[in-house]
Length: 319
Ligand SMILES: [Zn+2]
Image 1 (tube, rainbow, N blue to C red):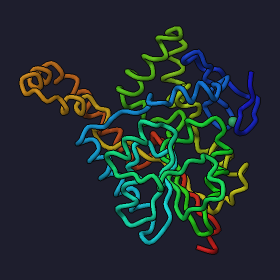
Image 2 (image 1 turned 120 degrees about the vertical axis):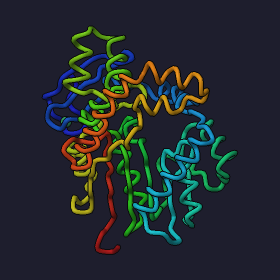
Image 3 (image 1 turned 30 degrees about the vertical axis):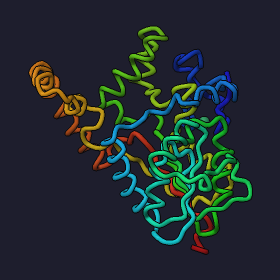
């Protein structure tokens, strides 16, 4: 079997098959990875519009609100050059521009680019065309749930870090391999991952991969990797980034997101909503204490979070 592509350990274990790819876990660094990696053509084809989910008006508004909080939290305001790398529909690009940054956008999906142009005023001269960012430099780079999609994460980090100005800051968000928080969320662990695994593997393989090994977030050909903290630290080391300039933290899912109550609250028709409520009440009563427990455990950071936030500053002494 393949060695771990990040830490090169030979101690790896095949967990299951997802869409004809093996999902393998490294026992040393905890990385979940895809074997074999899909071809570039297959990936390109997969991305053209496939990831693009046109958000509803209210969904877009909510995304912009939470992005405004995030961008304001991670970056200082001012006349800075900002890049949203793997921008998708471009809400971070949009928010950064509103906040006064000189904002740039990079993505490979045409449909997302068109949406961003039409709805968020993405200007042609703000679109970066070269994934390698050759000759470009930025004060701030934001990359939200992108690194798990790329074939070569080491190169990805090297490219983004390389395009950072002295004193600049790079923020990478990505799902966390084998996190415990997702175990508490039935819509993720059971309805999404276990169900998907069981469709393509035996019951025992699917059960073990889902609830014991927690293979979540490694979903080829979409997500080729799912990173643990240890595997990210290994990446940082391989890219020669000084460790004291890096902070890695867990992020958690907010209150009711992905809950049955959340799904129910989105039903528009009042009659249907009432009927569903009566039938789903027992489910809500079971779910609420679980949500409460999960939130308590995450507030006190007892369990690992669904995702990781990696903050990298370049040349702290110059900042
Ligand atoms: Zn490893």
